[in-house]
Length: 303
Image (tube, rainbow, N blue to C red; front, side):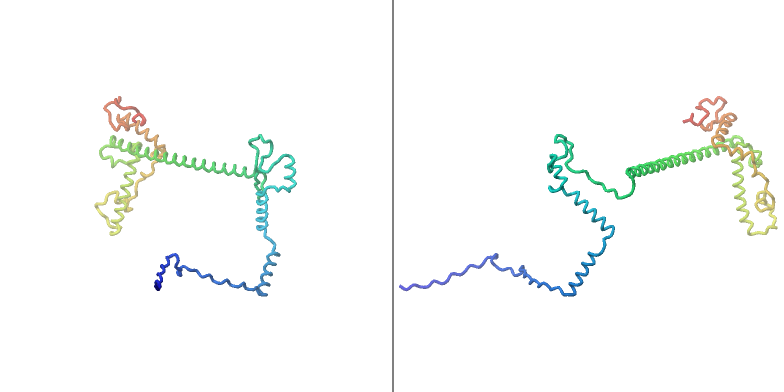
């Protein structure tokens, strides 16, 4: 019986790992052949090298070289061939061991560090500079604190003087209300009591200045020869038709105002108390001289 040939079996498709990834392939570029140095390039290179060797180093470069050599020498241990190492080895020294007795726990295993002094100052000069700088800094701080303290004291003193001055003018108003007679505005300033004369003078000066400004504004639209029958003495003084009296010069009042504010206020408070039975601190007028219920004569007694 004749044998029949079997058809060939289909081959299995290759897996994804067997396929060539053409997208991620890298093709190495061929190496460039070394270019041969020309005569001109070689001559320029040798010329530059000769100039570099012949150029003297600057002070900064020499110092940097010396520092590098020193640091390298300090960070390198003594070699076994060193004469110093051989002498130490004869005395029992071993690499990595401490100097001195083995029982000493504080023996040094590393050499002392070197601090290079680069200036020409003497030994201890840096500590002296630090001491002077510290003293100067402390002096500046003390001065600032003193100035701050002086400033606070000055501001406090000015506030206290302003407060006392305000109470003094208030006491003058109280005394004026108790002693001013009817028609007191027409009394000459020098005939007013010295204790509240400053209040009257200031009020009249302000009134005079107001009248001067008003009358000066009114006089701009009329002739100087015009005689107004309604003008009073203040109007005539403002327009220059009559001279003012010499009330501004009052030596007695100036001497009284030259006293300290506390002294002037104390004088007014005592006068109100003795003459009018009025306590300036209580702000009350009592019926008799005993003034029962008043804590005392001073401001501190009324706290």
